[in-house]
Amino acid sequence: MTGKNFAATGQLLGTVVAVQANFYRVQLEQEDGEQGSRGAEEKLDLNPSLLLCTRRTRLKKIGQQVMVGDRVVVEEPDWAGRRGAIAEVLPRQSELDRPAIANVNQILLVFAVADPPLEPYQLSRFLIKAESTDLDVLLCLNKSDLISPPEQQQVSDRLLGWGYEPIFISVKDGINTEQAARYLSNKITVIAGPSGVGKSSLINTLIDSAKLRVGEVSGKLARGRHTTRHIELFELPKGGLLADTPGFNQPDMDCIPEELIHYFPEARKRLAVASCRFSDCLHRDEPECAVRGDWERYEHYLEFLDAAIAHQTQLHEQADPESTMKLKSKSKGKGQSQYEPKLESKKYRRISRKTQLQDLQELYRDEE
Ligand SMILES: Nc1nc2c(ncn2[C@@H]2O[C@H](COP(=O)(O)OP(=O)(O)O)[C@@H](O)[C@H]2O)c(=O)[nH]1
Ligand SMILES: [Mg+2]
Ligand SMILES: [Zn+2]
Image (cartoon, rainbow, N blue to C red; front, top):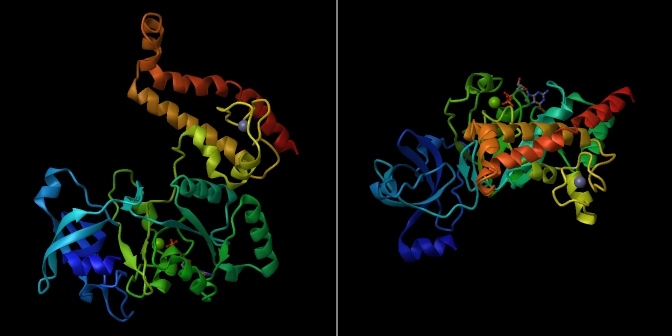
């Protein structure tokens, strides 16, 4: 237990909750090993267990980065000036890329049932992106005050078919927000979803000190590709940390094409009881495929697969712009292994030639 470590070694342990230039804000752990939880009326700036820290030169020399979410050992605390130095970064349990946060336990996806309207395709994209992180995915549907109970039931049934059990909440009317909060305690959670669905409102309800601006279109301004986004973890009153992600608005389909299928719970269910004839099946028009079939999001799968393949192909072309030429002139003499990236994208291309059939299938579907 952390409390014992604290007593035995005299080490100060904490979690990096924000990075500002070369400074790290570190929330120290209480002696019982829990994150500090204090009265809601106490502002974060007055929090005595929050230290502004630098990174020890030794860490810089070994190239040890410090991320938001990292658990760190703090040395030489200056309690009056509330300063310290990060001497060590504990091994990470997980590492998210965008947003860059370590040790995240789960993703809380927030959508609204109305205003903005619930867009199945957009929701699907966010779900796939969330699933691709390998973290637990929690789905909250906000603004439930705007729809009737039968409408809510309809949405619920539909998403159950996708393999999800959403929590319907209303931040405005305080419906189920306590229930949602219980899922967050003592975990690091990243909140994601399109703008306007009530993410900032939810965070403000859960954490008084957060005071995020509601109705702010921060997403639009912060979406620029090279803008570094400020990431901050907010401490939940009952323990646990929560991060907003203004930059998570339009998830890219940058996953590995073969892995995409595993991000669909419906397909996972099918693959648990049957296998495709070919181990490298992409579940399009291959014979004896266990996945292809009559499930709602199969169309989404096909579209996302095309996007993922396009992304992969582009990556390989960037890595080796003259690959087509090289492959032609050298493939006779030398071993093929060095052209693997090229061959891989060629593999996808060969399959995607069959998209004609797929286009037909889509036409049929459109006509139905
Ligand atoms: N009707 C209704 N409106 C809400 C609810 N929660 C938030 N809103 C409104 O939705 C708008 C966007 O909220 P905001 O928290 O800024 O969304 P964000 O962009 O996801 O952070 C604001 O005008 C909020 O007042 C809710 O439960 N019901
Ligand atoms: Mg917001
Ligand atoms: Zn298959």
